[in-house]
Image (tube, rainbow, N blue to C red; front, top):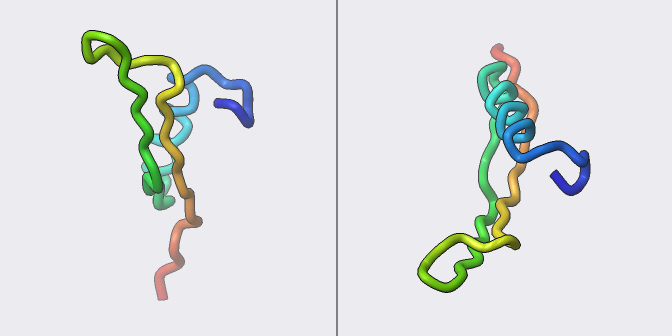
Length: 57
């Protein structure tokens, strides 16, 4: 989101589309900030690695 300026749901849709096309999308890190009352807080984020689809031999 930060790099593209896209909305959160747009980024999730883009990553889902890449997976559907055969790319590997793996989660490298998830950081969850928790606020009072166990509610999620701003500052939570995930870091992903995207690799190209592998060619079949």
